[in-house]
Image (cartoon, rainbow, N blue to C red; front, side):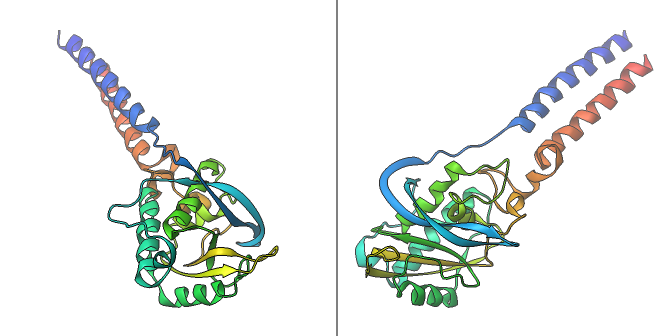
Amino acid sequence: MRCAGYRVLATHALLLLLSGGLATADETTTTTLHSTTTVLTITTTVSSGTSVFPTTEITMVAGSASQPTGAAVATGTIAYTGNALQAAVLNSTNYYRAQHQANPLTWDDALANYAQDYAGKCIWQHSNGPYGENLAEGYTSPILAIDGWAGEEQKYNYHKAKFSESTGHYTQLVWRNTTAVGCGAVQCNTGGSNGVNGWYLVCEYSPRGNVVGEFKQEVGKPGESSTDRLGFGGAASMSSGIRLLGALAAAYVMLAIC
């Protein structure tokens, strides 16, 4: 009778742990960005050596997501000047970074001064400076511009985890190793192939992101921590695997006694 009881307990334990463990290991989280009619003209980048540098331009339809709590969407000059620009950039940027388990960025005046000086040139191309850099043209609010960069996530392949021309702004935005940002903006009307019309937003990031070979650990899926990139699907899955192995060992001992 005692052996029969052991067999029943072992069977139930295995069923419970198998169902719970496998459910944890297979859990995934996705984020859907709602499309908007706002069109964003942005520059893209390609890899060279160990870092990524800009070369080309594309036009894409921007995505949008829920605004961070307490972030006011200003318009026109108010949105792009002084403390309003800093608050909008930090609120929106850190909203998206939090979704990808990246630490919040702090504002850096040196980066902001660099960005402001370059934006004043009203040239539609990257500065090729020492920082990571995102550009946007024609948006009435920096929050909408950052929404556009974040919207590139829809095209990012987490399985391949490498640089793509169509997702470079998104990956810089949520790059985990980046700690600081500074932005500048100017109303431009230069026209031409390399000119800018409307508000020109330039954001600089340090340390720079989009480093070749580091995308897997630096760009996380929504809801996934950096430790989730370990073998067997990450820490959560490894924990489930340990519980499963423990259950198998216990069941084996129970059955061996009989």
